[in-house]
Image 1 (cartoon, rainbow, N blue to C red):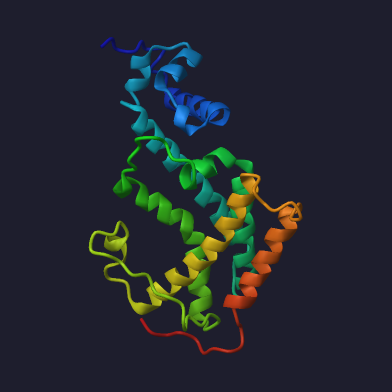
Image 2: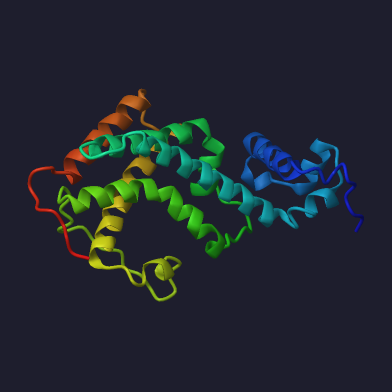
Length: 239
């Protein structure tokens, strides 16, 4: 196999390749992703791509990592814009709004990480889990704050049940009940916002729900009312 030329090995070529991959996904869908097609678009040889991404799956993994990283950055920045005590509900709302905003700004990236499968692709979970968990950390962080204040009552909420071979087992094997309570609440909230956002970006909201922003904000308020009660519970101090 011929080695890429020095010109093809320019420092930013991996980013150029990924940008071309996103364009291809946007135009033809993730299932049509082709390294040779990217090479043709960029006017380079296929070995120039293989030098950075040895196969399609390696490129998909890089795209997924980048997408989760950007997704997490947006939510964390939104949450941290309301730093300080007494602004917990503002942080929760800001995190939720950032979730939808990123998905609307990057629908193909959102669908790649949560929706559209790439035929034959087997995600390397040990490589992806850290960035996946970081993308959830804005939500779990603020839920942890609210839980510590005693503003969230987890009674009746099913705790995560992990099988020995569960992909999250290694991350949670030493988790105490408080940690599992926080994760359980966060996952319930995530499932609600994720469902609504997924319906919106795929054009599947019902015909009468033509204002996605208003519907989403109503759902955020409903979530806060259901899960957060600033006055009813004593702080959780167990470790």
